Length: 255
Image 1: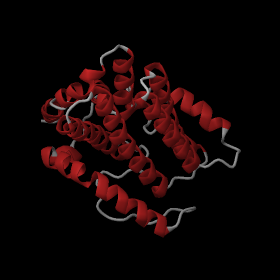
Image 2: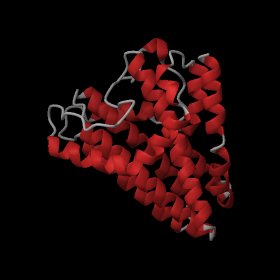
Image 3: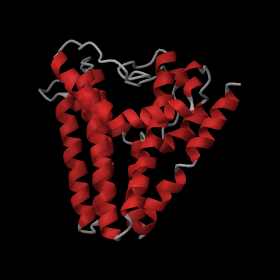
Image 4: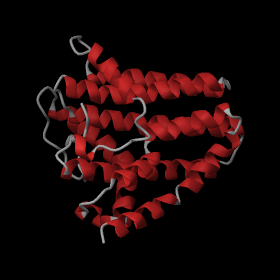
């Protein structure tokens, strides 16, 4: 099941794992596996990728980063197939992502003996990139009759849905706000009128999808395999400048 109606779907370069994710989700449709269980499996895959990275098994790192991306898509697919949307699962997924992203960049810093400051800057840039992509994507989904589990602004604790407790929603919302709040605030300050936009052309969303986590992890894995590990952190610092470029393009499109 897609997050968008067919007429508004675009080539999402960060979502290359979706076809396999749908196969996994369909195979679990009648099982006791929940989307939360699948989220736990992608956390395990991410941790295995980090261990492989630290031991410089870069092909294995690439494999487990791609597997992590596939499983990251499978939890949402399973929730849609079983019709069990969950704010707990949505926030748990996001919290797991940002923590794994940090650990991955710390591991890269470790194997390259680079600068702590540049590593932190790359992490900050990486998260801002993903936040801009998610910001535009959620606006598109909310304005084009798509999936609405994710909200444009995560300012208030949502009411728990069927099958989850309010206490778990409260807990994971607090974690999400603590970890993502600064990035959401910055992106909103840079492009606060985006929510009023009615045009997000497919080609534009495809370009912005290079900021998506799946694509970011694929780039990291490929750069490791190609012997470019020392350039990963500088790459993500430099690529962060495209945040401003995409914002300018979005404004021109909706003038």
